[in-house]
Structure formats: structure tokens, C-alpha cells
Amino acid sequence: MTLRPSPRTIKRLRRGPLTSPRLWRRRIAIWGGAVIVSLAAIAFAEAADWATAAFHAMTAPSPWLALLLCPAGLVLSVWLTQRVFPGAQGSGIPQVIASMHIHDPGIVSRILSLRIAAGKVILTLLGLASGASIGREGPTVQVSASIMQALGTWLRLPRAEAQRALVLAGGAAGVSAAFNTPLAGVVFAIEELSHSFEARTSGTVLTAVIISGIATLSLVGNYAYFGSTGAQFDLGSAWIAVFVCGILGGGLGGGFSECLVRFANGQTGIMGRLFARKPLTFAACCGLAIAILGLWTHGATYGTGYEQARSMVESHDDLPSAFFLAKFAATTISYLSGIPGGIFAPSLAVGAGLGQSLTAWLPGPTGAIVLLGMVGYFSGVVQAPITAAVIVLEMTENQKMTIPLMATSLLAYGVSRLICRRPLYGALARRFMQVLEKRPSPTP
Image (cartoon, rainbow, N blue to C red):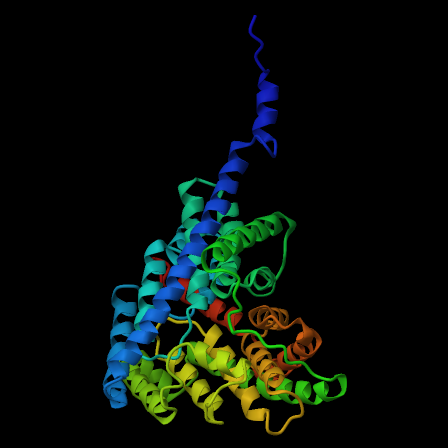
């Protein structure tokens, strides 16, 4: 006589945590997606380095060629963004935040489509190959969230889970893989992407970040993104630098964010009107300005700013004292031009340059002040003080600076809020959603 389980037993097994097909499909999506995210982030990083090197190779015969390459590249990028990849503009993080507040699965699928993700990668690389001051980390977040969204759709997971848990996990894993900073990926998901940490999504995020981190470590090793420094402060002298870097970094970062928010809302006068009516002409003017800044700084403002920030952290740079102002201007112009690209790495480079320029006036080792400038400006831009402190700590492997960095980040956050009352990514996400409401059919 064959014993068969009762229908009630079968039903119970299908709902069990270890035997539920639905839960196992979700686990497979998370595990496989985290590995794919890591591979995509590594490939994107390699391609970004190649694109930056290509620009320097093209301008090697004569730096003045940038006056042609920068405007032409930005015009092409804006044209492709508007005609071929609409919705790929910007850093990508506002789109991910917006997708987590939209309940229409069709709209979410369009925002986080693999086609837009591919366009994001291609156009970011084009921007770097044109000398623009942009980063790849923000686009990596959107690409990673799109991969997770596609896997959830393919495996027919419940829409609510695929829309929030998987997208959140993808964004966090993207930060982790892009910077090799697992803890920062989790904090970023809590503080910036979701502004909360629900019990239902916490395990999903942690699992994705851990698996993505393991895959990244296996392929590229355990490296510090901006190098290592053992610089630290004495307890007494640290607070002078904390106070100065927090106020200046927060003020400059808040000004940058307010400029971008106002531009997105069409509150920038003649510049906004020129962008709206003649975007290609505006992009060409932005490219010309970027080339002029690059010529003035002997090429230091082109690209992500990774090499310059790393050299300042490790205290062996020869950059001009006004580097941070030039990089600030180049990053602002690059973003306003309308091309896709992130602001993470350029913002960290601006902050490092700010700290470097203050070393002659503040007590303490150069490397330590550079870190304070970096975290102060970055916190002022993103208004996410915990993320800013953790990401700089993990990227530089200097836990001795934990308290000064966190204090600087918190002070910069407070100063930035006085200038820009809305967090940058949240404000851009709301603007993105407003555009979607006016034009619901295509992704804007």
C-alpha cells in the first residue's frame, strides 16, 4: 500500500520556508542576481577605465583637441539620450528611488528595463570618453536594480516583492560591487534608497550584498577603492578640522545640490530656457566649458576624479590648490548638460581637493584632513551622513578616523540642509515622478 501525503500536508509543505517553490524562486533570483550584478559592476568599471584612457589617448597629441572632442561627445550623448535611450539621463539613483514608490508594474518595468540599463552604460562610457566629469557608481545602481527587476519578472515572482525587495537589493548590491564596500551598500539601501529598513526586505538586501561582495572579492581581490592611509588626529586638534571641513564641505555640497534641484525644476533662468529649447547647443556649450577647465588644470578635471582623489588620500599629489573648485565646476556642468552619469566619484574627488587645499591652514596630517574634506562635501551633496561616513571609511580602510569622520559628516549634513532643504536624490526622484504623471506612456 502506497502512502501518499494528504492535501493538507502538501499545502503545508508548499508554504514552508524550506519547501516552498515560491520562496525558492525568490532565493534563486536574489543569489543569481547578486552574482550577475557583481559581474556587471566589474565589467562596467573596466570599461569606464578604458573610456577614460581613450580620451587621454585622443588628446595626447595635443591637449587643445579637447575643445573639439568634449563638445562633440556631449552633443552626441544628449542626442542619443533623447532619441534612442529616453529615460537614461541623470545618475540613475533617482529613477531607482522613484520605482520603489510607483505601484504600476508596467511603469516600473519601463523605468528599470534592460534596454535603458544598456543605454545607461553606453552613454556613461561615451561621456567619459568625451572628458566629462561624471562617475559610474550611480549608473551601476540603476543597472543593478534593472537586473534584479528583470530576474523577478522572468521568474514570475509576486509583483510587490519584485518591485521593492529585489530592486532595493539590486541597488545595494550595486553600491557594494562598485566600491567594494559591503557595509556601505546596506547603509545606502537603508538611508538613501528606501529611507527605512523593513523586516521583510532586510534579509533580501543583506543576502544580495554578501553574495555580490563575495563574487567581487573572488574576481578582483580585497582592495581599497581610494587606497589606504593610516593618518589620524590627536583628540584636541581633530575638532578644529572637523568644524572647518564640516561647514565648508556642507555649504559647498548643499550649493551643488540646490543648483541641480533648481535646474531640474526649471528655475535657472536663461540656462534652463536654452536647455529646454536647444538642448544640443546647450550641450555643446557645456562641452566647451569642460574642455577649458581641463586645459586650465592640465587634464585633472576630466573623468571620474578617481586617480586624483587616490593620490590625495595617499598624500603624494601635485594638483593645483584650486583643483576642487575646477572639479566642482566641471561636475556641475557635466550633470547640467543632460548626459547620463553619476556624481559619486566626482563628488569624492571634489571633497578630497577641498581637504587638500585646507591642509596649509589646519593642524593635523594631510591624509586625515583630505578624508574630512571628502566626507564633508559628499555628505553635503547627498545629505546621507551615515552613508557618507561609512563609504569613506570602507574605501580608505582607516577605522581610526571613525569618530572625526562621522562628526564631520553630521555637521556637513546640517549645514547642507540650511541651503538645500530637500535631499538631492529624493528631490530628483519626485521630479522624475512628476514627469511620469504628465507623460505616462513612454519613460521620460
